[in-house]
Image (cartoon, rainbow, N blue to C red; front, side, top):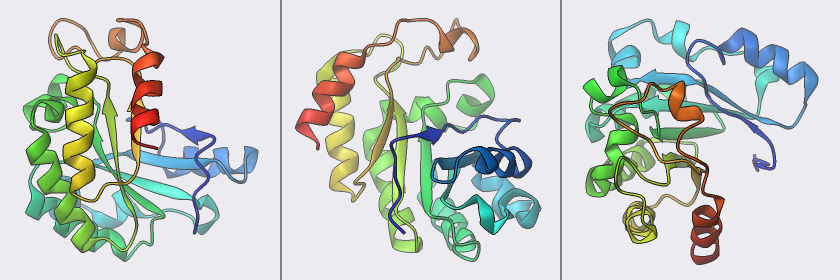
Length: 198
């Protein structure tokens, strides 16, 4: 299935569950819907069906994974294959303390080589395309060369699609809610990235 990315409903913890996605599908037939971020631990050690089940009417639907261990991510993708998602997305954009304590989300932007290894493992195990959700930077890292280096490294591992949040993530000092408004969006960095990586 070719996924139309013109409009997507972003993943939101505690909001974009299967009930919300089913409701949203009634409003729009072609919008790409994302699951809430599901951690590899929840899939490997929890109630798989509770986290991965959805209604076929939700297609196109992407599973967003949180994790930083390539083997665990590959195993989670293998399990997700049974649910036939249209895309598997690796979260490298969530700034919450809880996510950082698990060593995934936006803090992964500081380690593009780890993200590249994760993506390679995911691609080798997934029947669906693997994408990455990331920010333009983290904390004091907001320069274009850092964003470009992250993108190049992960693209070389096989990722063809990046979903870029045009705001940097503050990993300390702001709540995720505050980080939705501060600092300002910098679309120009995303436009520059898109020109170099069409």
